[in-house]
Image 1 (cartoon, helix red, strand yellow):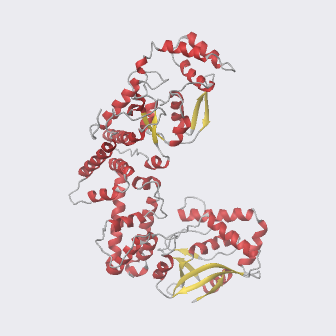
Image 2 (image 1 turned 135 degrees about the horizontal axis):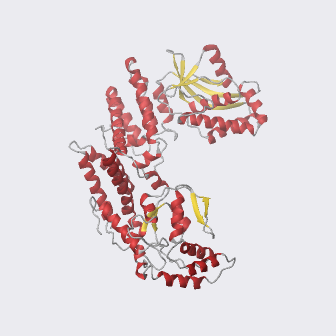
Image 3 (image 1 turned 60 degrees about the vertical axis):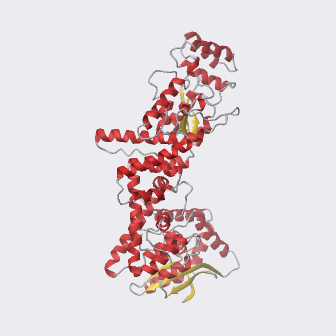
Length: 594
């Protein structure tokens, strides 16, 4: 039965007949963004000031349940909910809507610890509030319009279906971009017909479990452990359904062609459901639960988390092969870890970065193929974390769960950076000259005469004779730092002069001298930049916050160097100690060459 109902007519029926709307389990949550809410407000405003007499709010498809005298919303809940939020802001009686899987949701602004649906309701409410605060004259017009007190009508196209509500939902939505395979599958799996009166509690428990899985997958730290950053699908539980289909975990061959478009996954499960009927629901949900539990186990086990995360960075599709290995009937956890290490060896051997003496190419333009050593630097960082956790676990019998942040590694575009700059800094700018000279003032091995020359230079408003001071300092330093301690061009393009760093930090300090790089990196995680002024006093400026890998921090504090070396540069002694640490960290479990 199709006709039109104004908002006020819905409210009248609500008062007179006790009509109430119910958004069933199979529906997605409230998902309108600010842009959707603003579009609706502008549309209604334009309508008010136009010559038109009727404005359609699109179809509202419902199924009347005589059992509890509720209207189950099959299609149109986003707009219906938004209109209810709008009425609440305007101080009017709201449309009575209940949410079967989100009983706590309120169509008004709610403070405190809230879920994603209530967060978006809050966002919609604040969007409406801000819009009207800028257009106070519109508020009264909106109230009159929604209460049918203008010579205009805002209508829902009312359609009360007598067909199966879930079948109607799927038919209406399967060709809409807004719904995903998982949302369509959810409607099919959680429909009431799959459950007897005795198993209604099971339906509610499954709906709760579904939301729990989705919430876990929506955590970027978890998601970027198993998927690349580019995989930004709307409903991440789709990934589990795709795995079941691609691996044919249900051992089912559809009789109909399911195609290879974006809905092929749903068609696979729809055909399976048609054929298996009563047993289909349990089989599908058991596979979803099994995959989720496997991923959770991998995520929470410190070694598997790091080794699997490493392999997925190299090839995101390897997760299917890893699942095959894990599901072998005779597979043990030690054997699975051995398999992971074997696969990691293939990755580092493929690029040749397992050879720690490898010479990376460079040319006169200072271009380098240093990115080829990224796998070994990543492996060094994660293996250090694993070893620290192992050692602490033996000491305290507790698991620290100090994890490598794969999400940040992927989202911040980490790259390989030279520790000692690939290009020598010619120190032609006064600011660069002063930064270089300040490092000598902090060195106890520098003579008082040379320190006085530096202080004099720093106090000059115009550039002084920098080259004269530089020559005297270098002559003095030859007694402390032998010439062979400096890295030459070839040596600067070996593993001992590379570290991992986020893209922003890498670009921000350019060709700075080692002490400047060190100060920038040390303040990065605190969002600070430490600057040494001409009086050697520390100034602190705000900076972009970024995660600094453990081993990169160790490099710039020279944690691997047993003997004392100058803090002004990255010397060959430092480089050798760093290379030795990489080898000793990895060689017991991986095929690395010194």
